Image 1 (tube, rainbow, N blue to C red):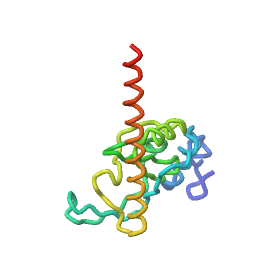
Image 2 (tube, one colour):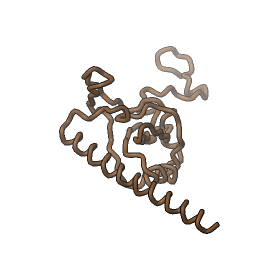
Image 3 (tube, rainbow, N blue to C red):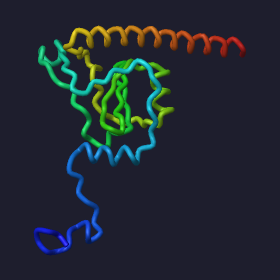
Image 4 (cartoon, rainbow, N blue to C red):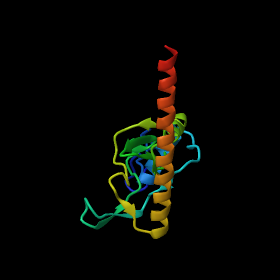
Length: 163
């Protein structure tokens, strides 16, 4: 019996208890998601990161929030050469979009879903160390993409030469 009212509580009546916080909700979702840890690569966690965008935001700083949307859990998206994914716990990561990074997400069981991609519109981390890390990651990603494009061109050339 419910202590306060003398009537049976919802739990005693067989109802599912209400989740008290988004963290509890994300924990329940993470138990149901069948995603593995993403293979290490060029990823940066951006939860609570302060970023700035001198062009589109008029030098306004903003904070990348942790995803509280359980629908984002286990999902990824790409925009302007940047990949983002949300872990089942709601942690948000970004990295350069390369075939290897994309394959790592898909191999881990992540699914593509439309969502905002932090740092894909020219934003930069305000923290100088994070800014340098992000620029280095983008440079490595750009080199990797160029390598992948060259390999694809060579493969296509060999294929057409065989005909």
